[in-house]
Image (cartoon, rainbow, N blue to C red; front, side, top):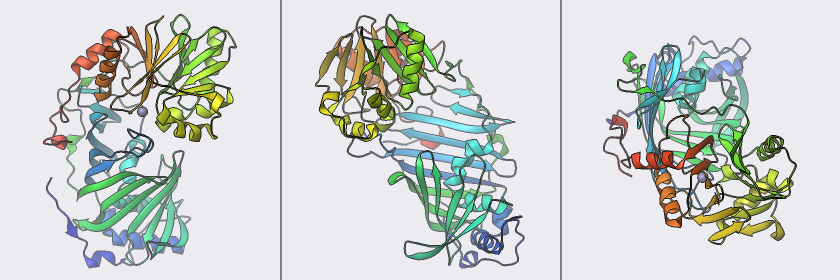
Length: 487
Ligand SMILES: [Zn+2]
C-alpha cells in the first residue's frame, strides 16, 4: 500500500465561521457552534462536498471472551478495504483475515438496489437479506471519524449538545446524534481543535468506545490515522495502519466480480425448530444457537450453551412430548458466547459437566459460584449414560468437550465446523481439520456431526469432503488485499 499521509494543516484546525450548516431544525446555538467547529476541523466544504471515500486499514483484532485459553485473548490480523460512494449511498467493504483459528476473504457490496456478500475463498456470493446502506456499512462509518463528522453535518435533527468533559486531560465537548441502524452516538470533541477524539455508544453488547488519534489530512479532509475500538473494558481492534483517500472510488466496484457464482441454498434457521436426529437425540434452536438434547431415561442431557437455553429446552420438551428434567448440561468450552445460557441451565437445576478451564467463566455466566454438587470436571474422558465426553485439545480451545452418542453415532461440537447449505458441504476451517484429526485419533465412529451454530446435521461424508477441500494458504483468493501476507 502506498501511504499518502500528510500533516493536517493548521488552517484546517481552525473552525471556519459562516459556513452553511443544516444541523438542526431542533438544535440550538450550542449544537450549531460545535457542529460548525467539527466540520471546519475536518475540512469544511471539502468534507461536506466529499463524493466518496476509501479507508484501507490494517488491524490487530481480538475478540473478547474468545482466547485460546481463558487467561487472555490473542490478536489476529485483519485487513479491511472500505470504499463508500457517499452521494449514491453505495458501499464496498472487503475484509481479510487468516490466523490460528479462521481464514476469510469476503466483500459486502452494493449492486444495483441490493447488497451482496461475496465469499472469495469458495468463489460464491449470497444475495443481501434486506440490509440497507446504514445497516451494511454503518460499521465503517462508526470506525472513521471523518465519516462521523460527515454524517453529523447531514443531520437536521436529533443533534444534542451534551456539555463539557475532559479526556486525556484535555478539555472536550460532547455532542450526540442518531444515525439509522444504530443507538445514538456521542462524539467527544477536542475543545481546541474540533477534532473527534472518541465516540461512544451503548449497545446490547455493552458500552462501545471508538478512539481516534494522530489526525492527518487527505485532499484537505481530516482523518485520524490511528483508531482503537473497545468492547466494554476490552480492546477489540488496534490499527496498525490507516490510509484514507477521497473522491477516488470507481463506479465499476459496485458489481459482482467475474467468476463469482451464487452459493447453494442455505438451511433455514429463521425460526425455532426441533429436529429428531436419531432415537432420543434432538437438536433445538434458531439462528446461530442450537442445543442437542439427549434422552437418558428419566432425565435429559443438554449440550450447547448459547443464550436462550430455556426457550430451546421448552420447545424440545413440547416436540418430544414429555416433561423430563434437564439433569446435566455439558459445557463445550470456555468461550463466553457458549456460556450465555448457563444461568438458564442453573435455574433449570442442571449439573454442569465442564472442562476445568471453563469453570471460572461458567461461574460468571451462571451469576454465582456453582456449588460442588452441581459441577463435574471432565478429566480426559467421561461417560454419562448414553453420552461419551472427550476433552480434546484443538487450535480453537486448549480444552474442548466433544460430546458423542455411540448408540446413534452422533457427535456434537461447537466452532469447529458448521454446515450451512441444504445440499452441499460448507467451507472447512483450520478448526475443522483439528476436529477431524481428533475424532480419527479417538477412533470413534461418527455418522452425523451436529453444531452449536446451525441446524444442519452434517453427514460424516460431507464433513470429510469439506476437510479434504480445505485450503490452508492464508491468501487462497489471491486478491490484492492479502497478496504477500503471512501470519
Ligand atoms: Zn469458541
